Length: 158
Image 1 (cartoon, rainbow, N blue to C red):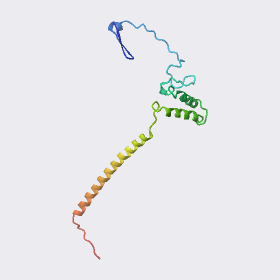
Image 2: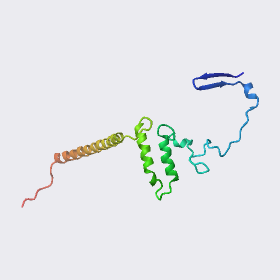
Image 3: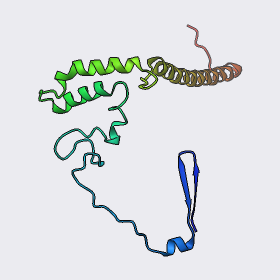
Image 4: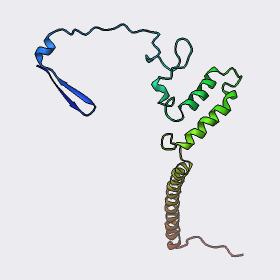
């Protein structure tokens, strides 16, 4: 005998060997290839945009969803030589909307990028300093050994 337990949003069903021994009575429904809600990629067979495609990452919904749809539709249907060149206004509106909701649409922080690159530069500079000081100490050691040895060369006086 199977048992069902619900934990929050999850439903847990425990079944027995007897439950598995009988064949399933579920009927499989043949999928409709023209179903617009079926995952068929970004562009549907009829050439329209599949706004339900997971590849859009939810951009088509939310507070800027309509601006995104306007900009993306404009780009998709653009006939310009440089595709989307006629869509600057729609993309600007979308960007302005996204800037109003930074918690939903985080932007790459330029300061963070600058901090990372300056940390990388500092590490490189530290490595270079260590190498230079190591080279300098080697050079100094060589100089010390050279000066501690007696000069065997005879100077020629004229």
